[in-house]
Image (cartoon, rainbow, N blue to C red):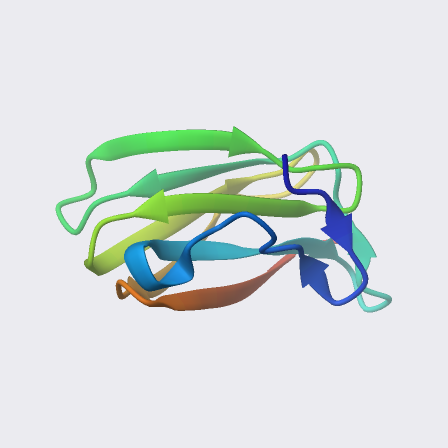
Length: 102
């Protein structure tokens, strides 16, 4: 199991050469406080729901996705949903920082 580490999620045990990884952190407000009770949804290019994960206590999340264009829809308490476009490519890690309203 991969845990959160300073600077992002650990990729120990993940064969990045064979995976398209989308990962990141959800932050709130000007101070960039991690949001640990949010959900991040992975939507395909047509807007169809594909997967959902809760953020960790440090606001981190990770998806293993197919190559292509995706939308991350972040749902955090006391904030409007935030959509973020991201491109996944096998052999790379797409790092995303999502800012939600304070």
